[in-house]
Image 1: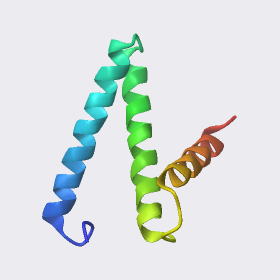
Image 2 (image 1 turned 90 degrees about the vertical axis):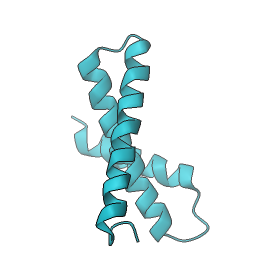
Image 3 (image 1 turned 135 degrees about the vertical axis):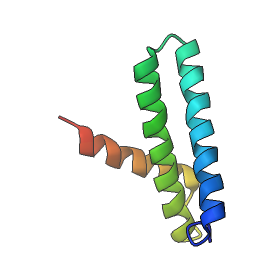
Length: 81
């Protein structure tokens, strides 16, 4: 429903951007360099968004945490040396 509605999609993007800003600030407050904090926050948002979409579209028995973990494992596999 969100992807079919431009206004809802825009609101969702704004929420995700604000969440990324909050994560960046929290990581920076913990001593993570600003550039590293921003990269980690944006990657985390991408993992969350991808995992959440899979969870919504997947079987009702799937646990959100497990789907998010799978998305994180997938990202790690893609960027691993």
